[in-house]
Image (cartoon, rainbow, N blue to C red; front, side, top):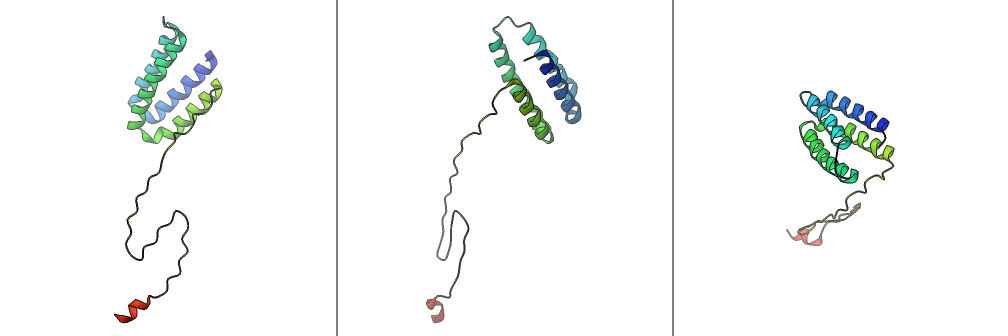
Length: 128
């Protein structure tokens, strides 16, 4: 990451934390500074240091969003723009499976798509 990209990201995240974070803003801004210091002075290989910081920030941002869910859209935009600036592909969506269990009785209709029904009176109803 270039110094310009880092400074722009740091400024954008700090503004986001001030906007939504209230009391958390100062702590989150401090965490940004701590990340910069850790990455600049890390004795470990850069890839390992970045991986550790990415894991740490995943936890920090998850906790921030748990307290300030209204910031989710702006944070997603910031992360998307950062990934784009770094040339990273967008994350692929997680695969998911939809499971349905339907229990139906008489005269019940189920369909996976649109239903078009024409109901006619049963001959059995005349006997009642």
